[in-house]
Amino acid sequence: MAESISTLERAIQPGQTDEYMNHAVTSPRLPIPIAEGQLTIHQVPAWQDNFVWLIVSPQRKEAAAVDGPDAKEALAACARLGVRLTTILNTHTHGDHIGINTDLSEKLETIHVIGSASRAREIPGLKQPVSDGDQFELFGTTVQVMLTEGHLNGHVSYLIDNALFCGDTLFGAGCGYLFDGPPVKMLHSLKRFANLPGNTWVFCAHEYTADNLRFAWSVEPDNQQLKERIQHTWVLRSKGEATIPSTIQLELATNPFMRTSSVAIQQALKKAFPERSFASDLEVFAAIRELKDLKRYRNIDDGELPVNIDIV
Image (cartoon, rainbow, N blue to C red; front, top):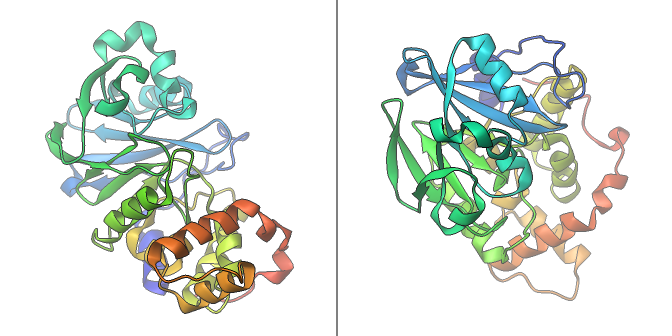
């Protein structure tokens, strides 16, 4: 865990700005290079806790936006960077993800919109429908498409080099609500992510990590790596900094939804649901999601969290 935090700190340092004072994150991360520096990923806070991820080709002076509740912040970021927004990658069809398409409706003829084939009618301006296993090129770099349902039917994620753009499927220490479900779909999606290399960056769409960690602590308080992540997260958030991106390694170590084999978590579930048996990963996962949805963990105040431990 200490190695994961150190890796994050070396790779991405915060950039101070007054532009996002109404957002949960007031100090966005500096750009992250991927694909041997051919692309850089820029974090753009939008609305209250959304992130628009700008995938920028410095050589071509072009950018692709991954989702967005509107176009304002993404266009402002492109203007600052001196690049043109030429592409939109949509992960799913909730309004805070395709709002950017709607905002740019008059310009969509010149913007290449990529999104789920199974939800094509709901994606404004869609030009390239994609499905699980598809590959395409973005600014000369290969993008792999993964069907990652559970949150919403047709939800897709995009893997570019070691960068995963996973929308609302996987969050920092959590996963999305099962609006469509069923639990088996989300579990399948998370298991696909678990098979990615540990150093894969997780670029999810919201700053929800602190809330998710509060729940994680309620079901696995003896997890030392979780303790360290809580401490690190509280430090970041106290300064208005982002906890995202994380890594697959970090999620496997601390995210309860990716830790269905944890004996401690299973014991917490048996305490919460004594009438049930937990003989399979699916039963454990479904119970974790149900327990979190009850929101009892929000009664835990900071004094009950390990926020004063030292990070090695």
